Image (cartoon, rainbow, N blue to C red):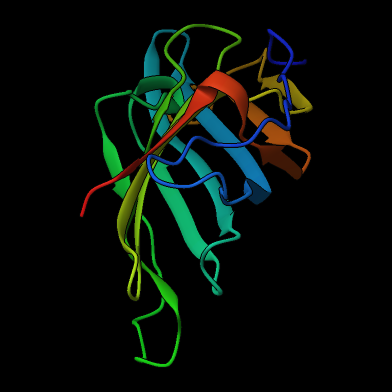
Length: 182
C-alpha cells in the first residue's frame, strides 16, 4: 500500500526573515510500523504504532532524534498529540545549536500520514530561529492481516501489521516556514 498523495520533494529554499541563506532540512531514516490485535471478532486487544526519524538541519551540526508511539485504537496517531525529540545539549563550542524540537503525526484519515515538525535553533551572534514544516508522508508500506478462522475463546482472533520501508523526506517550498525570533 502506498500512502497518497505522492510526497512532493521540492528543493526550494526555506525563507529566512533576514537573509537569503537558508538551511537545508530533511528527515532521515523515517520508519513507521504498527500492529493491532483483536481478541474476538468485536473486541480490540493490544495495539502499537511507532514512528522514528532524525531531523537534519544544515544550520545545526548535530541531528535531532525523534520517535513517537501510539496505543490509540487501531494504533492511530492523533494530530493533537505532541511528541518531543532528543537533541544534544550545547557545549558552547558550536556556532548554532537546537533549542527545541517536537512533532505531531495525524493518521486518522485512511491512507494519509500528515507530519508536522516544529524546531527552533539559536546561532551565536545571529539570534534564534523557529521552523514549522509539514508533509503528507509517502512511505512505501505493506500491511497484512492474519485471521484465526477457527477462533477458540481466549485466543487471538486477528492481527494486522503494517511495516514501512525506511525513507528520507526533504522539506521545501510552501511546506516549511522559518522565522527569526530575536
